[in-house]
Length: 236
Image 1 (tube, rainbow, N blue to C red):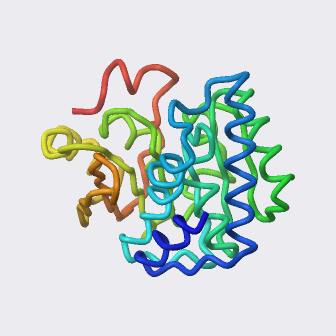
Image 2 (image 1 turned 120 degrees about the vertical axis):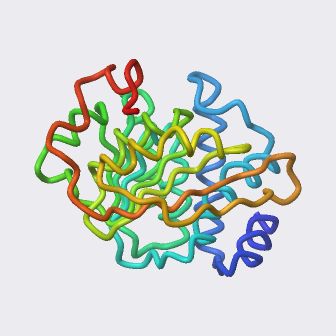
């Protein structure tokens, strides 16, 4: 985990030995569980450090302070970026949302084993929780590394963002065309694209873009539409 310590340092994040031990335990649990269920195609330790852990922590490049914020990680999968951000920034309050119950059970095992507090993993669909009062517009930050078109992802995520908060999706490759196609959806949902942060992930062949979409006004009540509709008929 010395590799992770150094990578975090280059981003201005200081990880202590206790935090590195948590990352080590998380890695071991991930690999063990991956033998019986598909959590990640990336299993080599060095690759997990570079492409999952360090990539998750690269949120810091947005310049948004995380301490004391409330963050939703939508479509969290094996817990990225939510769990690495929680380990690195213990004061962050985190909700992990995933539609597969098996994954949520794994995430709860990780949370318990690592002794993490102020973090919960919940099972369900983005469309359903976004209609609930305690979740709708209840987060300072919403992040997602889910592989979905930005127009579709915006409809799932922006309803959760509080006014003046940010939706920050992690995207790979060139996003210009996707961004162009999503501008109207972002606007209708109450957001505005403020910044596009693109960088290479060191020691990998991966390029990464994190978008900063600010919530300027409340999302109209009809969004998100019912399950399945956003991906079938994205807002244009």
